[in-house]
Amino acid sequence: MDLAQFDWTLYWFMFPISICVATTAMLSGIGGAAIFAPIFMIVFPIMGPEYPFESIAAAIGVALFTEFFGFSSGFVGYLRKRLIDFKSAMPFIMVGVPVGIVGAILLNELNEYEELLRGSYALLMLLLSFELIRHHDPVQELPLEPEGESVGATVVRPTRTIVGRDGVEYSFKAPRQGKGVIATTTGGFLTGLLGVGIGEVVMPQLAKRNKVPIPVAAATSVFIVIVVVASASFTQISALIAQGGINAVPWNAVVYTIPAVIIGGQIGPHLQGKVAPRTMEKSIGILFLIIGFAMGWIAFRNTFLMYPTPASY
Image 1 (tube, rainbow, N blue to C red):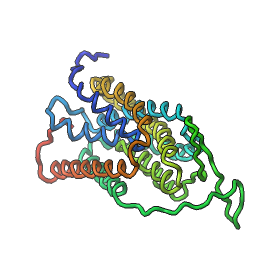
Image 2: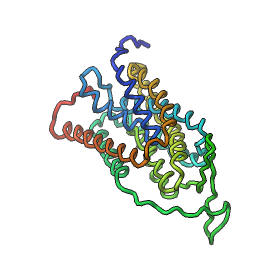
Image 3: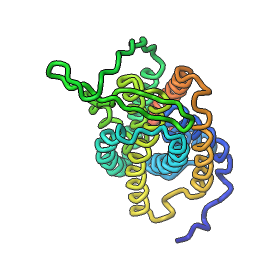
Image 4: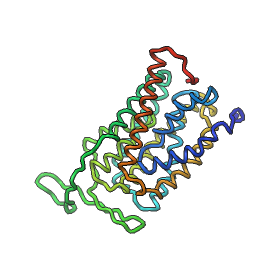
């Protein structure tokens, strides 16, 4: 294993950037890979020929690998605050993990279809931006039914109660996926394939569809994302090493991103509640909109205008 070929100072600037990305991810419940991957695939090629990663699979794999450490750090923070609803997380994990692994395997098979992957990523970003930016009419809260009580032929969902470390009590109906299982399946698959999806579909299901309080929804979403991302990222990294050796992974970037996201993962939970959820949603939505158009333009340019690609991939 020869790591001496790497310039270990090349990506130093990713340390402060990664702290900001991880903090934002912790506050919003959105996967950090959704921001890291565009940095690797759009910004790095613009900076010069020495910066781009060798392939799109490497960019997405490192983004997910970095996200895993950031969300693990955030998980510890939320665990200390006692806000994670582990029971509610399990159905999402059981769906997301296997399809995430399938998506990760497929990414390496489709790596040669670079513009297809870029175009798909652009479309996904645009769809997510629309979902985050559009106004959602507030839904009137329904009274919580007693646990185990039946209404006609329908069994009422039991009430769950999470008591935070600060003594604040959150009561809500036990979340259920229902038709949302389609979104969870899609999100898990896209997480393995494009590095983004599971956090973006789980958080709305918990907070909007099932009315789980935002602090509990964000904490539970972080736990779900960790498990799904871990399965997808380690599958991708293993495939990269199997195909190109240990040097196929840009360790000189990882050495800065991983420590930084661990720090950001601790900052995020402490800032929970300081930023209005709607403001955070709209801000992330606008960012995704910009990313979607930028990625779409690159895919269109490289496919139809026959411009030379600035990156090695």
